[in-house]
Amino acid sequence: MQFGKEKDGDQLRAIVSRPKPTIQTELPQEASYYCLVDESWKSSRDLIGIGWSLYSKEGNRLLHGSSSLKTVNTVGEAEAAALLSAVQQLRRLNYKQVAFMADCKNMIEELNQLRTEQTLKMNRIKECAYTFHYVSRESPSHVDALAKQARVTHKNYVITWIF
Image: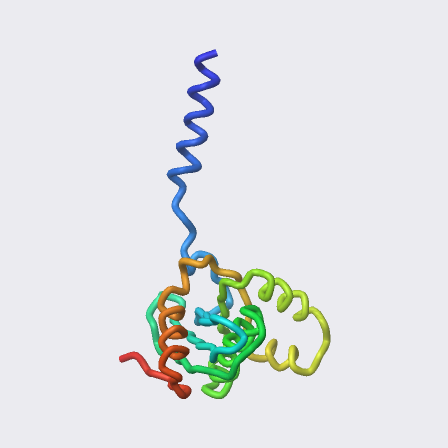
């Protein structure tokens, strides 16, 4: 009977000691970049803040953007506005093969379902090889800070190149 307990303990230790996946290990092979996106939303009466950071697939931050935007009714709408803004800006800057990552799981799942539909907008996104992925709440801490700062300071849109 002791052997069974030891085996269970070994399995538990193996699970606990397993390294947590990193963003780089979760990226699709075809991605050259990844973009973390987040929002800051307090209520439907307050401006929202958005923030995003673009990274090379090796994890080097290349640029980021943040802004305060008009009020929205829900945190989900704020997440969607943040993601839309990041996609629009990176498209204007001609970045391709970007994996967008946000901590709003429902929105990411819905976007990935929409990607299978043949619409003009989704075809344009596919041309740029953009993909959308859920990332845990801990991952976008830098973009969360950008979004909060933009909301609190009523910041106009700013893109900053990192050198």
